[in-house]
Length: 419
Image 1 (cartoon, helix red, strand yellow):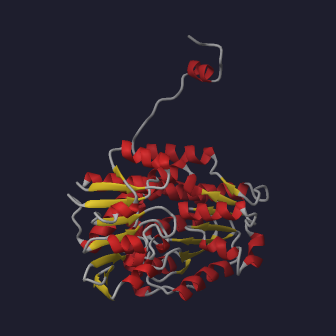
Image 2 (image 1 turned 90 degrees about the vertical axis):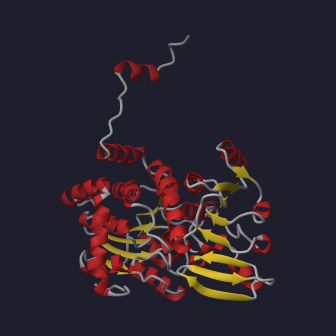
Image 3 (image 1 turned 120 degrees about the vertical axis):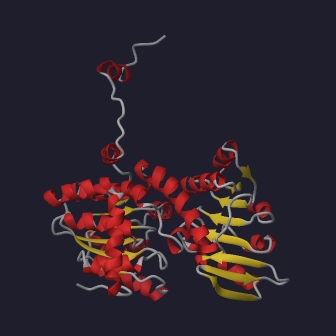
């Protein structure tokens, strides 16, 4: 088995981490046990380009129990947990290509290694693997049954490809599933972003002006957590509906140009490019902290910040680079603009990833059943998959809900009754 990890000696520590996360992933564990018996992916080559974390490791275990031959690479150069990568190879026999801090060449070499695995099903977090299947490795796209996309950023890219008539494989937008974005994006990103910032900086939220760029599900989650810790939260938006929602949720709303002058901490969660630009960096106060939790580091115009700076001090603290502007003002950039919740912390808690990865696993099974019937388009996750995941999660949490009575079923399906 081919692989490329940082240090195989880290495997024992990684195995402990994987099994600890598994304790908080009962839904995925139940699916893994069913897969072990039914083997819905028997003999299929599967490749995944995801954050190599303990939670992802448990998804890989489920796919292997389903009978798949699995290969995994990282979807971000700084998000890999090296001990987990080693354990996946040594303890679980999964071909893993991921090293924390890998350079751009290694990052894409690892993606190509996963394409060389000749997958028929792929999993993506940001669409980098699928993008290569439509570019330099287009000859390998013909065998793909379907690809599962995990993130808002990836779905945006894929819908753009579909609109331009460039998408040549079926893709299922797992990110758009309610069992994913309502929980993973909101509660997972909200908590893990706070965790990463505090680990990197020892930043006190209470009483500080915290600027949240973007009020999608990730932005909502982080804004909620920051306010809960006593921060004065300011939201910037380009969508009038989301801006109104933020205002009615009790947050200050203003343009980034205005927020830049008063913010103590800035966090981008948009999926867009250059949300914080040179003119914003120029306006920031001394020791402003800037982080990204919106997938790609292009949310921040880092080249503009470098151009503005007369000096850059690397690693003044773990995951903190200090950019010194003329006049002596300092801007602290976290994790090179990469995902702060994974670069400086451990990503989302396993309990919330349980639903996201359960949805991924069941959607792969669905794609296999629909082999040859899915068009080259962006598809939604079936309602049956969503319902199954939600019911399993409620059961795991010891919660019960009501069921419609026969009378209520008839009433909801009819139009005769009125006032």
